Length: 93
Image 1 (cartoon, rainbow, N blue to C red):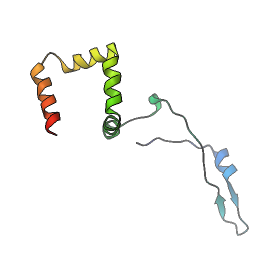
Image 2: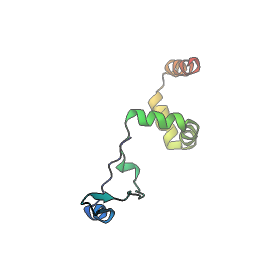
Image 3: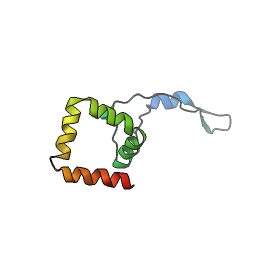
Image 4: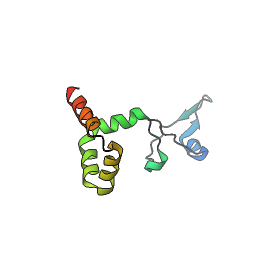
């Protein structure tokens, strides 16, 4: 996942100085940046990694939230055979 970080010119200038030989030296940049979910773009691989790592927690959240549970059931549709096939495929892997 790539998160662009903006560092202002003033911050860079405060970290850098010119040494006695005329070379620019910079201290390490160490800062915390806070982002909301809306500011981060996830690609499919990122989402798959998140789901794989937090599957139980995600499943609990979906199953315990009426709105999310209904959305899941709508996504699955009334096709019980397709649901059984998905479950069976998951058990084989």
